[in-house]
Length: 476
Image (cartoon, rainbow, N blue to C red; front, side, top):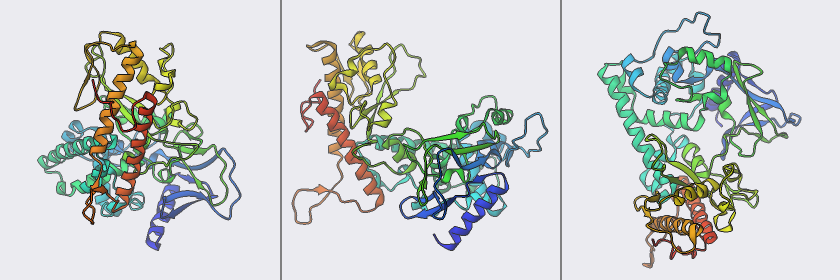
């Protein structure tokens, strides 16, 4: 880390501490080429035993949609006390029409444009800068050649959805600023919005998890009635430096000091070891899209899952969201399937999921299909866009065989789609096209994710008795 970057971090720590943040005296902010910034135990310090407070962030320095409503930091004192807030940072037409999470991103942009005049400048200047694209970009904003390495996977579908949403959000919000002749509306450009999106996506926290009941009273006093506390997310300076470990034991303590969110670590750490936070049980697809990394497979752990969307049943409310189920590289009940084991079966449900053929599928998926297939079967069972899987009558063998054939068809289709989209390059010697070699770190990451994604499909098909080449899996 160069001297300028170190100076920015020193200013961040000094600013945060001056406003009530705490960093354990045995912990330092460390930089390396692999994990970038992290928290670690200083080499000169004694080991830290479980139960220590690593870092804390006071509510008064958090940055979110809330601050756009008052145009400045929020006072953590009870709402019964008078607060001298300036009012919204944007026109009322903007505040009323634009979703809270989008307003939060625009407010981050505004504070960036203010530079050193912003209250949050010590924090913002420590973040990856908008022009340092490689230091913050997530898959949704990769170059097209890089995104092609995700073709045929869950991540590819999600990237397209994110790109469409971001484009629409930015267009709507910026048009309002233009129509209102808002000062420097041209400065709120697409690059800055992409940057703000990635900063919030990769670093922010859900308010209901990091705010105390007392602080929530302050929040409720500021929020419009139409807005819920989790309709946006919160940036927590200094607190957000701790990296993710899916196995880290932790508590986000808002009880000891209601105005502070404290990271209390439940693991022991030795000198020189990185101190981790835990972002929750997220699959590699979720980590890739939201944070730009995946967790490698080991003999005792894997994080490789394929997400499957099932349509709401016909009698479900119109606004019902599609259900999201998982297919696992290893059996869902395997000790190495941490995310899978966290999705147990529903109480008093069918036991079909215990059959070896269904061991790689989330129990709730098997239960959901059992429920649907036990009803009239002349309707669409599972979304397999763009081809729809439809059954007219049960095949021989009853309900279990029907579920197996339906899942085989779905997986066979997905496997074929994945292989057809394999990134290829010309053989310089004139032979058949061969697997493309990654040209940059994004393509390396995408290819690693892609290979594991294929392994998940093959493992699930083997459990169902489908040939490893996917043959015979796609018929209806």
